[in-house]
Length: 254
Ligand code: 13P
Image (tube, rainbow, N blue to C red; front, side):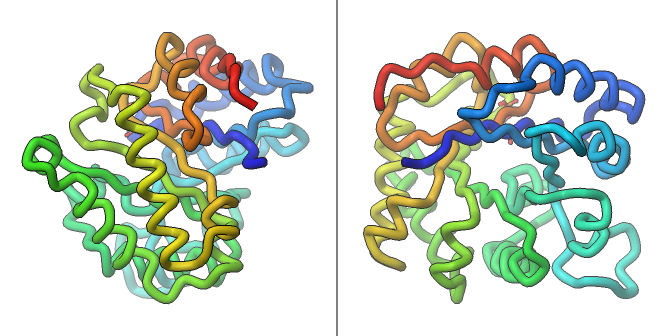
């Protein structure tokens, strides 16, 4: 059984004060709630304080990006060692906003994944297609290439520790969610690719999240699909009530 995982990607939002107040409240509301792994990914500036607040809780801290070197002359970047120092377990890699705004390629993504594993961080690898690519019937091809290149030379022991997030770019921040059936079809396809790269046993263990306009009113339908193991949530994770409702999704399937 794959443990569901809901991750909050706050992107470039919240001051330290607001972040601390949020996780303080979240921690109280989710105390004793253990069936779901909950990850909060604040901006770098709030990681330290957020980790302090969440230290004794069951909520895990993640970063939104990292540079693939432990230290060096790289102005403005953050290393995996620094993230560990700030209490991070997870790190989001290859988010579409980084691919689009900062020209991150699959090769960069691959370097970052390898480096994250070296330092025992757990990556959440984001993949997903543009609307034009979906409309042209190329969604699977795009995701296939992102996975094959992104996961090059990543071993079995590492892949089972990481999470893959399928985030169709046209659904991010647009209010337009993929239908649960369409999302699940892509998740199945991703699992199929994993079974080709590794094997079926490994593929069955990897958790695949959906991301893109996930909200309290659509999470239940998404989580009732066979291959959707959680969500990577942007906008709707900025409000505690909304995030708590998403974490407490109602699932009928076993
Ligand atoms: P929204 O939930 O705001 O659409 O963002 C999704 C996302 O990009 C999460 O990483």
